[in-house]
Length: 537
Ligand SMILES: Nc1ncnc2c1ncn2[C@@H]1O[C@H](COP(=O)(O)OP(=O)(O)OP(=O)(O)O)[C@@H](O)[C@H]1O
Ligand SMILES: O=P(O)(O)OC[C@H]1O[C@](O)(CO)[C@@H](O)[C@@H]1O
Ligand SMILES: [Mg+2]
Image 1 (cartoon, rainbow, N blue to C red):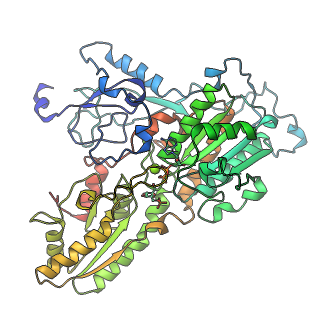
Image 2 (cartoon, rainbow, N blue to C red):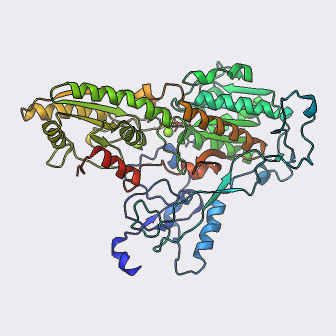
Image 3 (tube, protein in one colour):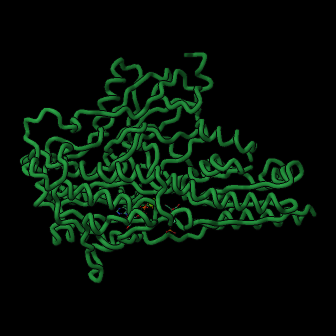
């Protein structure tokens, strides 16, 4: 162990929970920023917007783990269990009554005479999830902090099991279907699969026996804008909505305050709210959940993470991401063909990804046509002997053409700050794609080296399409599980896929930071292997 120490750069790392529960942990590993972990070093590039600064944080005064304490591991695990505990309506309403579930897996049809009264409660086989079922959050046991991508809690990289709650239907439900008014709202930007999730939520609610289901139009705005009427939803209404992209309900950024939203929930008699959105939307959902608790309302608030950026912590992926990556292939292939067919052709493609380079990285990997992939997490120079431009010259000299894929959040330091935010408080970014295009043209003109530069920005095309099959399945499972979570009485939770299993997370844990690409991960290394690009610093 001692021999390893010089290679280890421990940093004080705040876990996502530290934002909420005054904890911090030492991180041992390669010393590079890590992500997708319960141990997070906050990278410099992180643009933490309203999500984080609207939450209270006392993390800076947090204690760290004392590894000389022989019980540190069990204390860590207890803390973890507490952090990932999922809030339940009985936490604030201890007298809330439960009922046998009306979700019956053996029911042939909701109208079948055999099962008109649902399954008898003494039925042995039921297919329900036990509340104590758990899923392992981390499945790799790194034997050393120097293992690629290692995420270690202590200097010995001790194996610490971290369990999260398994999603699915429970035997006991806390809402009588006939007393439920469920609402669905879609917020933030578009994402392939929104309609698939809406559809599955409606279908599953009906299977439980819910009759009152409505859509709130245009995101949170729909709660306050009186000109926007609720949209009644049923299996019939949503039957084919997944065949097109976008959101049946519409989306928006910004909107009313949390207390206005909860006033509106009360006025409308909504006691189940399904919130589809990204980090910002989930921050809102959690605040709505807390406000409902404060008012002692029996309301279940359940999120479904939506983002093509794939920037939500702890999840294998978010719905829409796969489709966006797939759609990006068209743009990359066009850039490749243009570049390849031109004399000294250079194709540049900009892809979405405000804080995270997942789309750019995966699209580059998938296409096999990218020579240079630039993401927000990995600093680079454009100019200078090790810069992107001189590598482009080398590529033109050796291969005759080159293709660059750049994430929208990359290289923001090169651009003048716009100092503006959108309606939700997200920082408006400068256009790195146009900047690289201009600098590339200038550079080759300056050195008198012919180069034919073509720029493609498929921005909205990669998210305004319908979900592919893989995302369609993910949306189906997430949508169904969202309803199971609400009926089971959980609130302030979100659903996710974790090591291929489906789980519930408490919302604050997944939005504490944006998930980012770990420059020390195997996946980024694979991307570098595939492109063959050098370091640009
Ligand atoms: N910290 C917050 N507290 C309460 N509401 C918030 C917060 N941050 C954002 N919201 C609200 O959530 C909604 C969506 O936020 P935002 O526009 O940031 O999209 P998002 O959910 O992060 O999705 P995307 O990935 O498309 O950006 C907006 O209506 C916004 O007002
Ligand atoms: O133009 P809009 O709708 O604000 O959305 C743009 C943003 O949406 C996202 O796709 C998802 O958050 C970001 O990558 C991008 O910056
Ligand atoms: Mg966001």
